[in-house]
Length: 98
Image 1 (cartoon, rainbow, N blue to C red):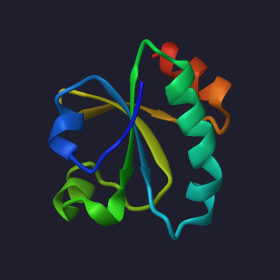
Image 2: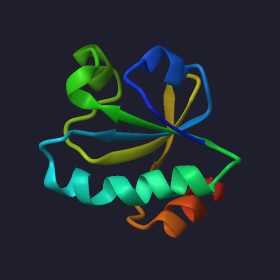
Image 3: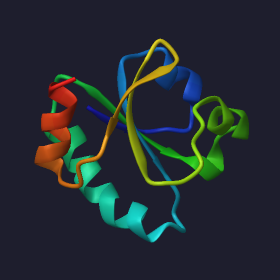
C-alpha cells in the first residue's frame, strides 16, 4: 500500500519502505513513478513518500539524510536497509529480500 504523507511519527511506528524526495530534485521526479508503482503492486508492505521540505529537519539529522532521493526500509525508528533499485520490480525484489 502506498501513502503520501509528511507525518514522520506515523511512518516511524511501522515497518515501512520510505522514499525521501523533493519536488525540485530531478532524479527524485524520475524515480517517484517507479516507487509509486512498487507501492501499489506490493500489497505486503507499507510504502510512504516523504517530501523532505515538508518535515521537521531534525528527522534529516536523525537519519543522517544529506541528499535525495533515498529509499530506506525502516523499523523501530531506525534504518534497516537502503534500497538502491530504480525500477518498480527491482524495488519490490530488494524489499522482499531484506
